[in-house]
Amino acid sequence: MPQDAFTLIREANELDALLKGGKVNKIIQPTADEVFILFYTGKSVNVAFSANAQTARVCPTDRQVKAPAVAPNFCMLLRKHLSGTTVKKTENVGYERIIVVTFEGKNDFFETTEKKLVCEIMGKYSNVILTENNKILGTLKPSFGDLQSGRLLLAGLDYALPPTQNKIEITDLTRVKEAFRDFPEVDGGFFTQSAIKGLSSQTAAEAANEFMQKYSLSSINGKGEEYADFLFDFLSSPPYKPNVTTSGREDFFLFDYKTIGGEKRYFDTLLQAEKYFFDKTENEKEFRLRYKALKEKIKQQEKKLLKKKNITEEKILSCYDAETNKKKGELLTAYQYAVPTGSTVCELPDFYSETGEKIKITLDGTLSANRNAQIYFKKYQKQKKTLAASEPQLEQTMNELNYISDLYDELDRCETEADFEALKEEIRSAGYLHEQRRTDKKEKPSAPKTYEKDGFLILAGRNNLQNDKLTGGANKHDMWLHTKDFHSSHVIIETNGKPVPDEVLLFAAEICAYNSKARGGNKVPVDYCLKKYVKKPPKSVPGKVIYTDFKTILVTPNSHE
Image 1 (cartoon, rainbow, N blue to C red):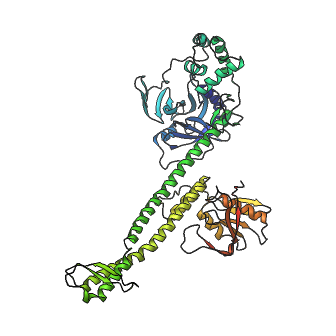
Image 2 (spheres, rainbow, N blue to C red):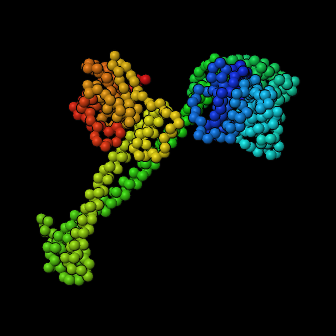
Image 3 (cartoon, rainbow, N blue to C red):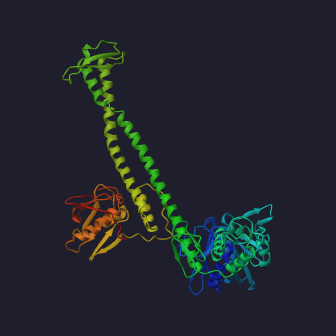
């Protein structure tokens, strides 16, 4: 990621123009490595200060985050020192990957004070540090730092910049020329990054490539001084065309890097490009986490059901000889006179068999034939009760496993936070989730997917609970659609009493097929009927219905976004 000093200098300038004079209105810390500060500059501007190893940044954001019930210590420290202050300036420091925001406010004695929020954007070493008069007041990620360098990031100590890496600032052109005079036989981009302070590998490679392309060179060897002059001009006044690569390895750039391929999306400012990139990255990350969390809940319930299924099947399997035990009891009762006292085994003719074959029966030699018969009858009765209880239990378990399969399909079709919340509520209502609902903020419920075709409104449910609500609230003369033999959204065509044209029916059926387990198939069968022929069985799982008087149409799935 080219979030190097070269890029951060321009970013700091844009932040300075955006935030200067802005007042701190609100501070929250939703995670251990991120702080959000809401500024008022004539309009509200929410800025993320992140020390996350993958997404370290200082940039505006449109993401809506929830404050924890109890604010972390660093958040409380920032509220104490920064609430009500105004931004004096924002700057890059020392051609380092550091942005410093200076705040101006009043102390308890109404004296003007300055405090600085130092944002070190250095991958896994990133941090956000609050200082006053160069003394550390607190850090987002408390660290004992590098003991060999003597740099400690602890409250009460002086703040010191990270140790230098013996690199040259591009502004010191004399030293740059000396370093480049005898350019070694190595890759130009690699040597540039190794020698010049504050450059990422992408920026260094782009500069070297630009120089060689401009002068039709195959390498920089022998052209070190000319390259130094070019690099100074290139980095001091770079072309300005902020963009985000939207394919391949996604990233944001100050200008159009020719060495970086992929589709690109352009923006008016660097901050807009950065906000788009990080908001998209964070939303995708949050999406993956929510997906993974819900999938784990479903998987846990699936494991319980599979275990229950195996136990129930074993119980049923243990009763495989129930009828044989009954038969043995009946034979012993009928032929007890023919069984010698003290016998441990006997063979009796099976009067149920047409051939009259004999059955070998094991006996307890200490008991009479009649008592042995009672033991076989008792065993049969126990097995009969076990089967009577286990078979419906197995059927119910299999129905629940089918429902679990439907939940996996719904999870794969979640697109928004509201979709996740609706699915989470469905899992909770099914008894698979026992955590408490948050009551501090009412979630906006997700709405069915809505389409319009030739004057007809078409609605598609996003999950089973919504399917029930959508179907239950439809008019009896509306058209209802569902894929045949596959879990899918319930789709309603609002007819308003009018006949549904074939084109509208086909359109709705394609949507139904797309929002189903069969979305990757071809010629998917979709059933359709009037809503009045659709009934929901009592005490059935969400989304479960029965329907009659239907017809079937074969379609190719189409999202019709």
